[in-house]
Length: 471
Ligand code: NDP
Image (cartoon, rainbow, N blue to C red; front, side, top):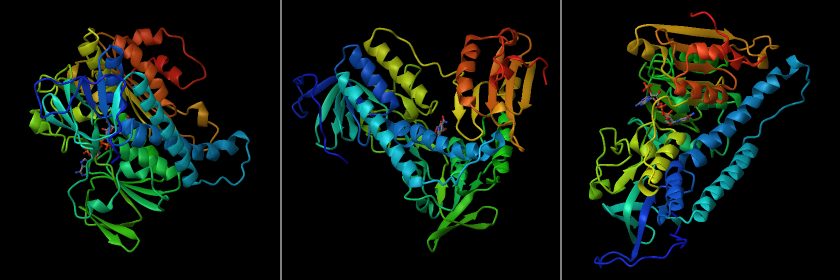
């Protein structure tokens, strides 16, 4: 832990009437310098509040330091393998392409350091007083900085401490890495077992395979990405297998043991598999351990997430929480909106709250998934008459290849109102497309309005407005 280094940009008030506490107070104390906390702090400071923020590690949180941003850089690096593979079909003759993990890791580290600096500088430029220290709740209105023991009294406190990887309780779990560790591996293993069938498991399976790792995915369910549209799940599952990723479904790791410099993994189907590295991608849990929630009276749910209302207020009147620690929608842009809404509401006189419906989502597997709205199964549960428009085609980006991969585009439409309830994509640029498709969906657009839009040709996205006949 780094020493507590406070940057004083607003004057310290003398606290009256509590001699036990130090003489520091503020309008808002934010615990956690990730996406949600930083946004809330900057917006509140912009509204004129005296804001302090404590971060024990690095600014930017999971997304910037060990999540979305470095992951996307690795994904982009991995997809160059596909480009090199298809280049000859487009007339190129390539030399000997070799991949250097260290070079990529160092480039990634430089970019993360740059972004972290921006996060920190933006906080300071906004007038937020930053503490490089772990902070815990001492009372409903008081935070203690562990680096110095100093206490700060706050009119309002915001908890934005994010989540941490969850390791199943199995012998040898400590021998495995999690996504927190994968970015800084000294070198890539030859063979790797990944456990899980969610976002992190499929994203890393796809990218590591392309970077030369022989990947085996162990998933306890029948089909990866539970909760996503079934057509998307099947499409990605087939594409991953075709790319040489071994997927063992209905299989759970029961023990991990050392085997010389490698590992031996036992599973509940009675098999034992050798591997060079095991990564557990079995979900993330709210980061509340040791935060002093009990001392302050902040309630948590059975899943360990801080209970909050629509306005992100906890069971304690002066304490709010945003982001992954609340167990709502564990996505960076959602945490940012929750933090922004909190700050506008409490300090800007502009009450609003983050709408958690129809949040567009991307899974940066290869092929990529973009999805928004109801899955076909959800739509059929909620509405009597559903039409499905589905197209599976070879996008032009790889059409000259002998084994060109197909892209999936699917619309879920309520027949009675003609409203588009869900858009589901799997293929190149699906993440970029779904951001745009999410706008008409959120506006309540009908299929007819999609069809009235002129197609952009030739593109993959034109399928969104050219599918005429329900499947
Ligand atoms: P997910 O919840 O997506 O997936 C966890 C996986 O682990 C599921 O397949 C689950 O199975 C399985 N699992 C859970 N517990 C066990 C267990 N005890 N033993 C074996 N398997 C288990 O979590 P991730 O860790 O992949 O990601 C965490 C969150 O981070 C995501 O939910 C997402 O919100 C966010 N994220 C977003 C990304 C993006 O936007 N592109 C990228 C990465 C993360 P089952 O399906 O049966 O429950």
